[in-house]
Length: 484
Ligand SMILES: NC(=O)N[C@H]1NC(=O)NC1=O
Ligand SMILES: [Zn+2]
Ligand SMILES: [Zn+2]
Image (spheres, rainbow, N blue to C red):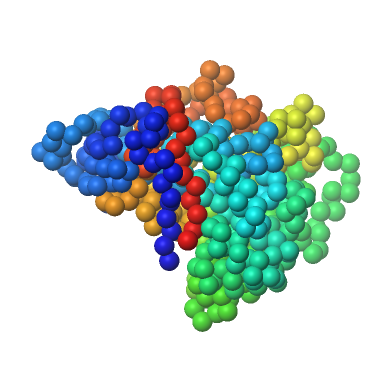
């Protein structure tokens, strides 16, 4: 199976790059490549990595232009497999241009767009075409698309096949109401049937694994609870929601095992928050041979319920940010490899839907706005757990590339796309009012006002320098990525 990134207006295109060269080297004392971190130079030629000279590289770098980044880190660009770009249909929430400019400024070189929050949802060949058309000439980084697995197509293999043939990298479904009318939830039979089709294509099914528990334990909710209190929201959406969904996936997970009905398919649990029973159930499934991967998001690793101010709906997301002990367990699971990768779940809305003045957690839009900040957030909060640059590259580039079927992305290796971030881990900054933020709506991000470390200096997408020193390239030359 071959996935390609069709090179739209790729190299040398007018204004695509802030560097005037199609063939050059970049070097630093901390290049994250070949499983190590150290001095090296990377040769970029026609959008690809042509060679890596490790150690004392000076004798290799002859005559070509060389950009020496000193002791800054040169790392594979981040691949965010979970972003809601909301176009067409809800471009007032976020859009291809604003979203990909924010991505470039944050060192993200590839995004995979979620099938919901745009209108219509991406659930058919026709609606995927609307996405691809809406993205034209607006992309500063490369963008692929997940399609939606919904009741209407789940039991209809020919509908699903036409969506998959049209090029979605895999499918996404919800096991609880999604908050979006034209994206209804699926039950476990829809999921089991959808997986059989996905197995033929060897593409993953991403699942929002929360389900309303059969036996509600939320009696407390009957009383008068303050909707401005974060505790009220937590009680309304307990870990039992995640646990119930994963228990319901038992057969689907089993089907992915060798010899199973959907061998070759792959279940990916998005934005895991419950690090206790839900994680244990998933570990058991992995252990018995199910093809299951897990992602979590920076907001679950950076924040805890205890520190969410009452009425501050910028922190509302689902599943919720839980207590500090849960956060500690998530870090441990990430470091131990039980959680495979990270994603942003960047899911903004217009500020009015966040009900910031009213501060009503029960009614506000659920979604964290974070795209531009995920690298410094992961690094700033991970430092005290001793995370390494190689781990960052694994969680944010290598594993996501594998999930999205991008065989030429996610590593600095000869022949791979020259998708690279250059950043300074030690540089601290305050996300204050003067900081340039490229999200469509800056004020709804829970990270505003925070002190972070890790400053992105330069971002290369297929050799094009798309962001440097606070500036973007003049033209948007990112490509849409369609699976073949
Ligand atoms: N529809 C949508 O974006 N939902 C997302 N928001 C959130 O906080 N969790 C989600 O799944
Ligand atoms: Zn979700
Ligand atoms: Zn999401």
